Image (cartoon, rainbow, N blue to C red; front, side):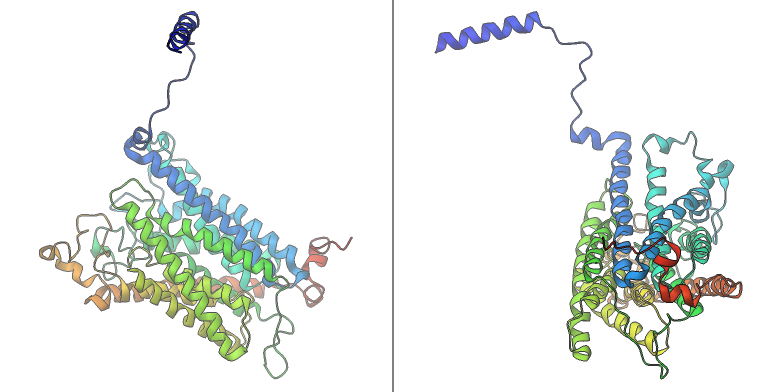
Length: 494
């Protein structure tokens, strides 16, 4: 055996001498540590943000299924078409000017506090100012564009559910353009740009802000309150579906045609939220980013779960049934409620946020029906009401361990870690920890955002109504828009 091993070694040595390595052979790839350190980790951050953005983009599929399952079968193609167009229109608008309105002067300490402008020969408008930027070598700027684009598409999609089954396609195209191109990105600038007058996390000069600015980590207010309030305005302006209320004003049930679609859509949205909330760290390489990501994921899970359980069992008291749709909307209510505070709360606070959010949703949903406002998807109750609650919840439950005005700036110390360095930060924590200013800033943000979105949305929707293009005719609505506008039913009987 020893002689055999020696013989094999000799043969291998001869083979190696006879067959030298090819000069074109690729080098051995660097190890993971080397990859992570490329460009100080910015390439890794860009990849992380891209993956999270893909998760959020997949939420469009969740919205499509949820909305298709909730409407009647005769309008399935119509609502699916609008979901597809949300993604297409949103991308073009966000490239052309939406991102510029939101982040046009980001990084400029003297930038506009109300709206983004066009520095550097156009800046992000049509991306004309990005040519030759160092950030293009690692993809950070374009990845941020993609991540913020999928958020914008989410805000626009929320509205389509509230005006489903009776909104004309022409009106849809107009309101989506206005919302994605102006109403929504202005709110983004206020809260998520380093010049925004409502930004507690990014605007360093607190003299520019109202009460130091609010904290809305992943967008309970920026995305969901904006979309929800616009949805409410659209539902008010367009009026209820034919037959939704009888002559006495009582609600006539109009159940959706597919519970499986509703459930699958909800699960996909829940999954997408793990890109929405943890991804809002905007990176993974920095010190402490992993902990924030993990906390956001856990808080998101707990809040969603208790939201679903609370709504279905509370509704059971009145309806005497276990309603699948109520579980779906309860889960979504919990997700929306925790989006602002997923990084700044302890898990027990996330539990309470989702639990209270369930009642916020249920109360808003029933109030809408009392007021004879027809919202087929409960878009306002889920996104508007719970979005506002989520922002306010940060001012109540924001932990003195996690709340910092600037997240990673010079003031990012906590009272527990270093009591001698608390200073003004004591006011910027939840009221249960002795703060107070933060709650005021959160409430101010909700009020200002609501006023902005409601004013412009009502003007837009009523202008469309007076122009006669907001709603389809009674004949089209009764027959269903699939047959009337889209060439036939979504389901073949052949």
